[in-house]
Length: 383
Image: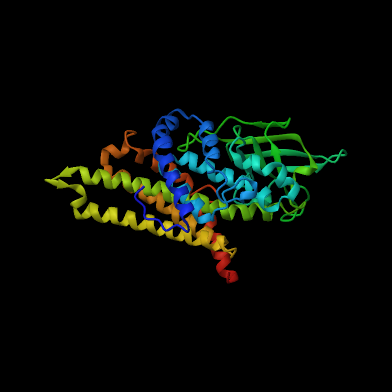
């Protein structure tokens, strides 16, 4: 992508440069066909795991790269510009590992984290339910203690990215009636008896990314797979969502940047009235506004990431980044279709697909209406 980056180290520059190369040579040639056919690219995630892209922000002692979050987000940008489904999948996988990495006991991290980060095991995040999406405290999925010490999980989780394809799920389930302190977090292998996936959702975009409801029918979960303390699950989930929102913001920025690049290239080649259309003021101003939206979204996303890297509060800034970046992606991709005219409305150019993919960015990881609510509450508290 045509981006000027300021990275914190030579190692970070090499990582982002490699991501751009992989995006250009491995992802971009496959994206349109896989999205057209709705094929889940499991082999791509194994490749990205082998290259270290699934573990960038995690500690080296567990097989991670130990890089700042701002570096990881710029890798996501590069991947998203080539294939948004894959970039979303990387973001979800990284978020699915965060509960274990942040709240797991040392013995749990030693036992499982390296395998989760290596790429052979792909993660899913089971938080939302059909009647508890924007309000996770209203969840009904339960995990009750059995006489043998196991937990028995029962319920359904909706909108699970990698649903039916993942090797493990980070599950949030109710263990008591307390609304906010009655939810716990578990790490559940996908092959556990009683855990099944419904048919994948038929979606407008991101068709190369499987989304499905996961059913739990008295799924026996070993007590040793409880992550954090019982009742701590909601705070674990919300902390992970703050970081996940930055991931989606970065994906949105990469998607918007790619659409802008396609629009600029087309406007430089297409001629009307004897000159390239980019030289016509009306279109040139439209492209300028698109560039301003992309740059602004990138700046606010990286600013929030740098707060996170310094262990400073960043929840409000994460919501702002998610709101600004995904709204920008929707506008920029729509305008890119307009720049290409009739060609933009065909599947011969990526901008048609990118406009459809941008829409869901405003919905998942908390709708942009919820982001506004979160931001307003922070302002009310003065935080």
